[in-house]
Length: 293
Image (spheres, helix red, strand yellow):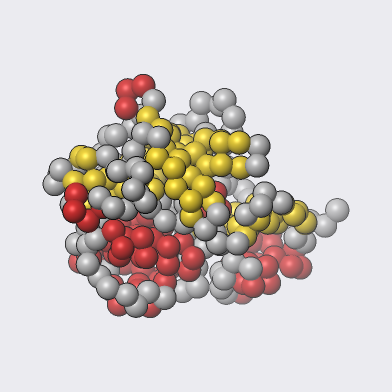
């Protein structure tokens, strides 16, 4: 389903710096997920440049693996799904509504993954407290896997269990189930728990991600149009550049913000986010970047 046979797995593993085992078990799933989000940044720069965003595996490999580039949720999670499928995992897609914007009802535009493990692979994975939900094609245990929610996303898989709570290097995430079986991923901040997104237990396919990608990359209401977005997860600090504002969020909840002027843009993307651009791309982004005030 995810084009795993088209992926150069060795090149992908080298890109994310992973040299561990490749068994379709929880330990491998955790390690690959963590390595992916640490190595490949979240960014929308092709959308900001007015380019088409292809989601076929060869195109994703050329961009996210072959170059020092990243991508947004569809790109990140299709690439990750292809790698996991190649390793031997059972992977399905889901579509989510963003809940970080308060009470606004947002469309289903976020793409994430659910991985089903054999019960014996995942039973002890929740520190003895939360067993993941059983379900999926093999009747195993389900884990939320998401490398594409930017700086607010999880560092590793989260068990799909009502009431689950996990601590990932000091960043806490939880799952609850609402009416009609809707799952909600939330995170704990100094002010309390806050929702990130919600999704129904309905399987989506790559063709569904294509439709969502079209909206996000071209619809006038998409928040990815007309501005630069680059984000990166980290165990100690999370960073986000949105338009000309650079924010750093630390584990203890402290936050710093500063403005990034046009003369700093290329260097900031390179140094802080690990995104390498050619001269034409830099020039195109500068035309869209806010001018000095």
